[in-house]
Image 1 (cartoon, helix red, strand yellow):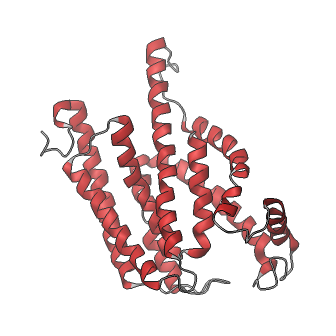
Image 2 (cartoon, rainbow, N blue to C red):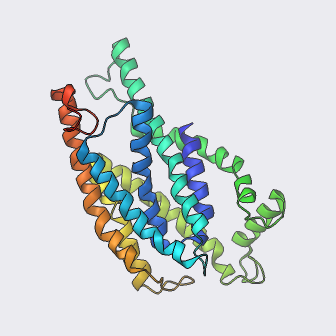
Image 3 (cartoon, rainbow, N blue to C red):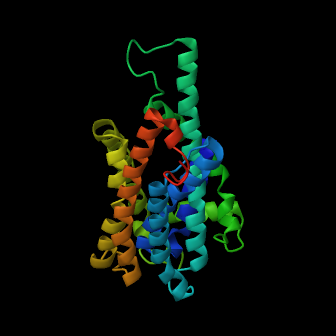
Length: 292
């Protein structure tokens, strides 16, 4: 179930990529903690303090400010408001995956506690590599099964899935400028771009796991939020091959300035709420201190 959530979120995100500007694409991923907070409240019974709520509202405001230019463009150029909304909404699938993984970790801890099993004095929690290995194992076949989503979102232009996938493989492995269609540009680089993406994606995920191991989950989470402002700078000022420079609205820059402090404040408030839950559970209430 967790792998299916990640699969749907990632595949829909890939489908929306050509229709959303680069900075907005990285910005909408910050909708994930908002969805997680909503689902955690409904499913896990989590309670968020007033400070946490303020931090999440700040993130939501930053996201709204950042995507507003997409609606002002009204589908002009490569930016489509519909796919911007779909991209933001698809984060709920990744959030569902986070919630399910947290349930699995909790149940594993309860199981080891009830059976008296330990790992020779070490932390008896479920290893993160075990979780990620199984997620990757299930995501591969699930990704193939959700290919019809391309047809649902109008990516096949009336073609069947078989012919659509055939053209996709021809584009990637054809090696000529016309491999991706007569109107395409730079088709000979399709296979190279996919290979470069795969290499960087593997290195990216390994670096995240190493960061979690050596610096902790909190520091890693906060550092990952730097993706949006850094990618905005790269899109705005670097003349990329095939992409060129991106026109970045001033609202996107305002969003970049707001979102990092809000994320850091939210994480600090979360730590405070966790301390209250351990020391005096009656104070770890919803909207504390209003709900004390």
